[in-house]
Image (cartoon, rainbow, N blue to C red):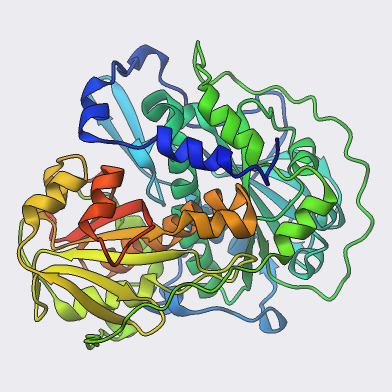
Length: 504
């Protein structure tokens, strides 16, 4: 019925909620023999090797997270800079042998380490790289050639003539292959794919800022046009976002005709399972006409209800120079598997929250709010808090030790109980749906993923750990009531002192 039929998102959200009962009643099990391959491979296509001598940025991570380069001052892009951005976003950072299996770990966090996100690159003005459309392969740091030519005009036409796309040096297109995440998370995987795209974007935007290259995220576009350009199988793979990188004064030339792509890819597993509820919300979230794209691109969010800021707590933060360099942080980053029930300092927590709360340059407005359960932060009273992203201030909602509640809310995982602080990103989904239709549902989860990804980077840059968590939906909303009235949890990130160096 289309993007305006917002009952589709309401129903999907409701039926994919976790509860104490639903988690225990689920008959789902992991078929390890059918686990999907984490890479999209075009066996018959030519590819371009990217530079391996990366010299990753030493810019302090906190500075990269808080910076944005205006388009008019954006630096030129050469192949080395583009490679650093792609590697920092989704590159293969390390491998680990466990029994008979090889585990590959990437630059950004992924739910279940399943890596459903694919990156395509439309290059038009990159020194050392022929203009064309490519697919980025993290496994071997190569780009597979899909189409020759300058495709900015085509992509801009699909994105309401967005100026940043028309004048970009590079346009990144991100999609999700749902089966990779569905294998473990079934229909709820739709949410997780947006989280994963968000954590990749957090890294990508920081890496672009470190290169002094402008970057803008775009989610209002004509899905069928981009699916045709990328050769996407629409039953299995869906568009998530575009990123316009850099600026050139050279206007986009008329793009070639997008003939059907006939390149074959290797099957991900022997038997892919489709989940009708995910297929439905994907279909009902697509924008399929120029009018729909224009409407969403021009939509405005209605005013949020005023949030009381009485008793706001402002804390000192750590200077960016005290954080590790961005390249070092990304190579160090993982997902902590256990926390030590030790305190971090209030300054560390305030720094992580401030660095992760800046809204990205994007065609959608801020949609999420931030709440916390502080278990142990020296200089800050334990309790439940609301974090005002604009004022960079904490508001105590209720004082007390809530380690037990924090552990319960994140599906009774010890990580929530043992961490120093549990960050909870929430949104008034009705407000987002009213403004953007079903598209707003994905946008809200995408923003939560970006903020969560930034929290990861900020924490690791200070020598702390972080991990993303899922949750009991309604119980989480009730815990933060009445302040969080009408809001739904989207993502949790636990921050604290790692108990061991075992990462994933």
